[in-house]
Image (cartoon, rainbow, N blue to C red; front, side, top):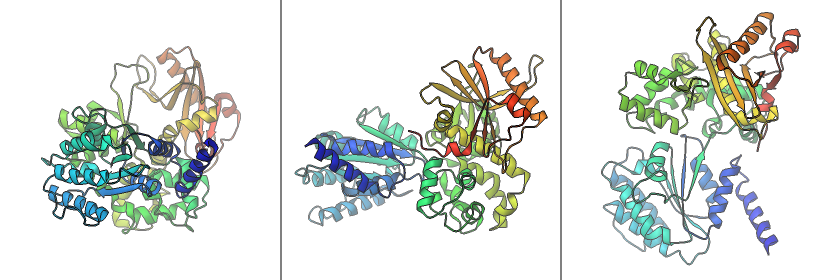
Length: 496
């Protein structure tokens, strides 16, 4: 009996995931929810265009009995009209004929419909996509949702309610961390992240693009692992041609995506764009005080916007490595936003072909270094696997020391502080050919390590680790100063 059940479950898994790339952990959660003997409330959130809707509809299509998407900037009346259209289509006009005047009436209709399906033993999925857009001012949407779940849906063991949205802060505040009637009502959550390099390579290969890792890395640096963006790539073109067509052609998706990106997610999006612009000008990151000075936002506006940008994975906050009393550093880690502000926006009038010329510029070398550093930080699990320390607890950060007490300033791209009394001092080098350590650079590496040891007063072993595209030439200086090297190929590996 168990063998038959597991065999069937495995078959269903393979059938439903035939078109999906990656998302193993998320699919495992969905499977568990489908098999749950009680009502379930799932919150799905993540960055715009990351594939939330596709995941739910592709994997659960045979279970969805109600599917509605909120309308951006739509009035309450318009949202109710769309909600009722979906309801009427599902019940085939056998029920209420007039559009509800409020959300309480709308959810009562939905509850009545779901009760008619209680005889069905499999999970019946109610999918409400872009739910934050439905919560218009003074609409009482949340109050009605609370009553619907507490009074009706939570008592229907065959119901799986899925609330989905790109406004991650809204999902977290109104649902996951709710203090009112929805407190602790969300039974599971999925935060969908962009594809990593391994998943990006699989996705593009499935589309017929069999490109070398260096070119895949170029594409990833420009648009990140956002499936909707990557889906614009066409086979038979090089990475530079793909970037040129998608980002610099006036008809390319990413030529104007930025203009909608933040305004589709946030109220007062000008505040968020001001922060993003300030961080793009300082790719190494800056502290909150500097952000306030550059954006001229009030304390309250700055706090709200920073929290929302962090929740939506546009920026990352790094705590100081040594002096914990110092302020945290805010860094722009959304690869597309950085690329747009650095290259697309200043070159919009140049049109298609602009990227071919920009590849030869000095600004490309500077940007690619920061982008590659960000990607290495994003792929810390692959870095740890390459170092053979997957099971070791680590803390990851970057480090900047300003000249003080007779010591010169120093910067280290990435520090991996390990629980086995070891620290990897990582230097990221994005090059088109094999990296060569010169006598001058070897001296810099030795000095950085010395300054770090003095300032940190660490008693741990410190290893200089290179993160490169192609293997560095193992000359005398390499052998003297480098303990570990990780090439880009390791970042593409599958890591559990």
